[in-house]
Length: 369
Image (tube, rainbow, N blue to C red; front, side):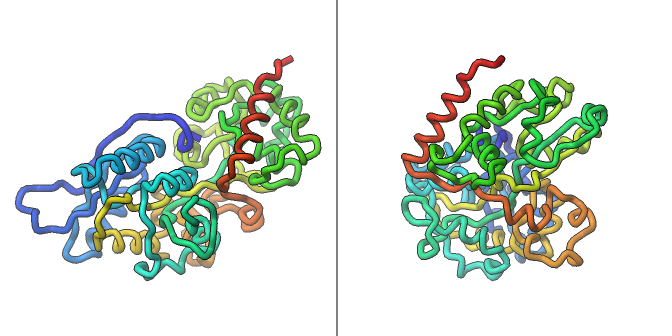
């Protein structure tokens, strides 16, 4: 859940050195989330686009920081530090539109736009208030996506004789004081709504029977709420189960053999990282070439494996056209029924936000017993 919350820090990486004498080469300046662009893809792009361009990629530790930079560039147009493209999470898209931090994108410029599954095209087609509207403008291009997953300690669950499969397992007595949840009302209330057979995007919470009771019961199961410091307790075994982002947890599996991931069978929350153009930016032809490159079906599997997050393009591809490492990874490519039951966290109006905030504060004040 780090992607939706706190600052991790910043790092700068120039993937193509701007050497003396290269002034005649085209330059594409990108501001990205840390580890968001695999170096192998940059090399592949440079080989395929002629004359070979230079990519200057500056990395930030948090999507929150990228959003703050968009605000800064709005105040200081034509800043020499302003990039041509910025990576932004769909979670921030509504605010970016409302604050006029980004400009619309013309999908007709991209040969591979139609390769995107419809639900991803719909996600970025919005009105000037940031709400979904199929008749309005396109504000970003989906680049990669992931899910909210359950991570659990296989060594601890071996003794229990079962493994988590769905959200309802979080309420089991054996997990009392063994769980960490995101410090995020939409996520926690949302997974409880899914347990009750409702949508993550339900707004009239007072009309959902037993919701408050279920949330209070879940609250008593929780050892900690954290969106940025939940990995270490899981690694140490202080918690046995954590709910978090696949973007945080997939890289963890390489070193932590006692941790497994599962996407709840009733569906989960989806997130997507997008390419957006700053509002005061000038058109650069390399932007179109880079985006079209990322949307190619032959590039999508490599992007998915290297970035530890899935390209939306692989969802529409035939299984036989995908590498075994993707076909057998149920987190990178969830079962079609689970994916169909999963949802993006859509923007709410003020009334919906107020209901979530009020219920969240009420539940968090429940005394653990």
